[in-house]
Image (tube, rainbow, N blue to C red; front, side, top):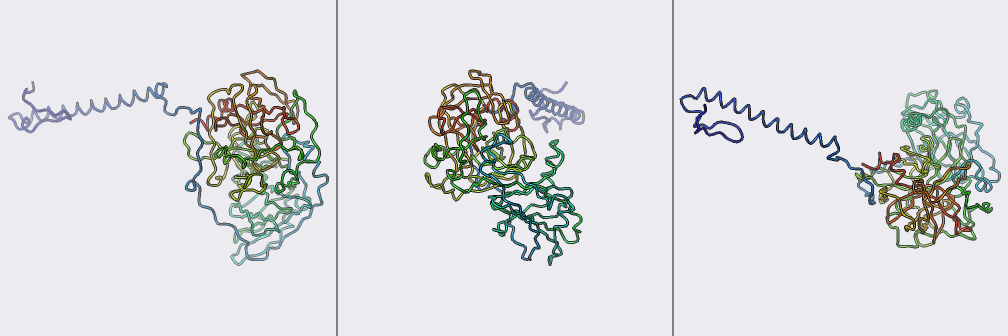
Length: 531
C-alpha cells in the first residue's frame, strides 16, 4: 500500500520527498506506473472528447457548414483582382497577311427581327468561309515570316462588308501549347487580344470533358473586337515547323446588330406581332418600338447602387455560329471569396461549348441620366465561363466566369429561403436590346407553372405555388429582347431569373415570367452557393 504522506501531483508524477525514502527504487517503479496510467487516461479522455464531437458532427447534432439561404452583397476590391497582364503589342515586323473578303449580308435588320433559330436575341449570323474551310486550305493561306527571335508568324484577315463585329470559329485539330493566337482588327491593330495555345487547348478540353464532341467542342471562337474585320495572327516558337499547326476557320459569326448605336436608332423597324396572354415570347425575341420606348435609365435614380454593379451584358455564340445577347448577374457566396459565380437563363446558355464563348461587359450604364453615353468604367471580359448547373425547370443557369470581372463590381446577394408572396415589391435590372442598363419596377402577380410550346414561345398556368416561376406585373419599365437571364430583385437580393413574357412597351399590361431562385437553389445550385 502506498504511504499516505506521498505527494502526488495532479499532472502526474511523484514528489522528491517520496522518491527519497528508503524504498526509493520500489516507489520509483510505482510512480512511473502511476504516471503511465494517468497519461493513458488523459489520452483516452482526449480521444473520447473528439470521438463524441465527431459523432455529433456526423449525426447532424452539430452542423459544420450550414446551408445559407439568405446572403447580402459584397464589392470586389482592387486587392482581390490579379495584377493586369502585360498588354500585347504589335510584333514590330511586317506580318504577311492573307485577306478574305465576304460579301454583304442581305436583310440584316430582318434577321434581327425574325429570330428564326432560337429564343434569345440574335445579333449575329453564321457565314461560311470557303477560303479557309479545311486545314489544307488554311495552311496554304498562311504565309510565314521569320522573326529575329527565331519565331514564325502568319496571319489571316477576314472582312465582312456591313458587319459591326466578327467572331472567327477556329476549328482546332492540333495546336501547340507554346503557340500564340493574337486577335485584332486592321482598323485597330494595336488593340490585341492574345491567347496561348495552352489556354485555347484548356478551353477545348473543358468542352470535351463535359461530354461534348465533334466540331462544336473543338472550335474556339475569337473575341469580337468591335469591327467589320478580324485578324487571326499565329506565332509559332523558334524551331517549330509550320506543319505542327493544324487549324481551319470554316465559319465566322457576322455581328449585324450595332451595339455601339443608341438603342432607339438600332431597334428593329418592324414591330413584333401581338402576343396573346396564353402564348408568350421568351424575353429575347422582341425589341422595343423606338417611338414607344419605356426603358427606365438606371442612371436616373439613386436606387440600386449596389445591384447595378453586379449586372453584365452578355454576348455568346452557339455551335452553329449564330451570336446572341442576354443579361447576367454576378452572385455572392457564403465564403465571400469572390469566386465569380454568374446567373443567367438556361435558354441563353445551357452547354459548355456555348459557355466557353461568353463575353461580358461590365458597368455598362449611362455616364449620366439619359445621356446615352456609356460610363468610362465600362469594361469587357472575353475568356468564357464554366457551366456549373443549368435546368429548364426554372430556366436558370449558373456559370463560373473564367476571368475575374473588374474591381468595383458587386457580387449580388440572394434569397433562397422561401416563396415570395403575391404582391411583394420587386424590380429588375437588365440590358433590353443590348441597351445601357435599365430598370423595371413592379410586384409579384402570381405563382406559375410554365412549359415550352415552341422554339421561342411558352405558356403558363397561374396560381400554382409549387410551380417554378413568378409572374410579374410592371408599374415602371418593361422587359425586352436582351433582358433574358436578368435577375429579379427584392429588398436588394436576387429571387428570380427572367424567362420571358408578353410584357413590352406597347403591351403595358403584359406579364414577365421569372424562374424562382429558391427552386433553382434547391435543384442543385446550392452545391456551389449554399456552403
